[in-house]
Image 1 (cartoon, rainbow, N blue to C red):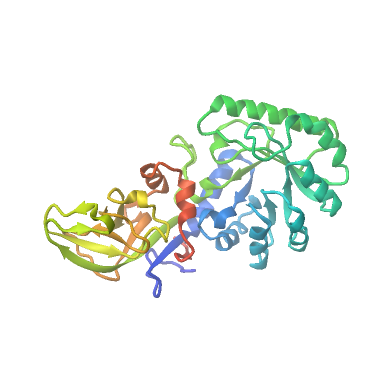
Image 2 (image 1 turned 30 degrees about the horizontal axis):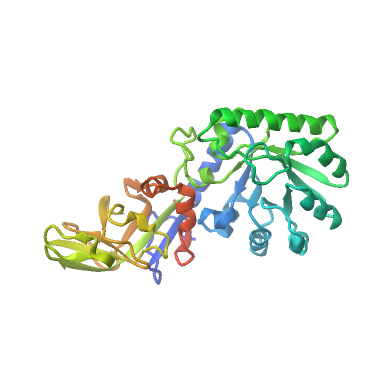
Length: 368
């Protein structure tokens, strides 16, 4: 961790990702203030590329975060071995050959079908969250199975009931129907004498909907500063800034071509910088001849094809030299490249761009 520095320069690494402790904590607080509900923080997929262990250590300092959510037992094991003692919910459920891992590391499974339910009963896994399919048709008990589920769970501690939104950012009417369906399921459980501690349905995109009967939100992209929709009402800020060093600077003559395939041809004499960041580091090749980096509030346009380990940018008229650090994603003085910006250029979603940042990009927590 680097304390009290607005800028860092990481020796020995060609690229690194600065994870802002301050912004992460502020984002969680903003979400809690907006919803008034307990927070289940999603840290699966290495915390969306931010580094699950370091991010989880920060999140456990926040009392409103009641659960850390992972996709698999192995992800939960990684957190436990790093000393994380907060409750961990495994969203992908429990498989037969994972029982030992669940028990040894005190992981809580999401149970979403009868096979998993029988596995939990067989191996005396007591505390579970039950998931119902209200329209996504991925994981979850079917709504018509509610009564059968109720008959089988008497020996379990059903700590939570949950479902999931597939289209909260694109289809309000479908989402509102899901809210009503899930409300009916919750009522059925309560009439049968089951009052789970946590009722959670809303993801980041779903925060804009009224779900008064739920007391927790299960959020991922928004705690990292990603906005699931243009009208997202919570003013979260990007947590990760990715930096990379310049390897060399050189002069091109008019007519020179750049990178594999020569897809860029210099229209005049110009300067270029070669930056130590490519698609193996997580930069989409779709940014070839389209994207840009930042350096001292100046945009450095990407020239030619993004390659595996390096990207060439226009440095004409800019004082830049080898070992200087440019901003690939995130904040650079007054300017910022958002994950949403890159996602739009690549016709994808910010989640994917975050998760693309590879392991060889060193993660470092900063206080700013």
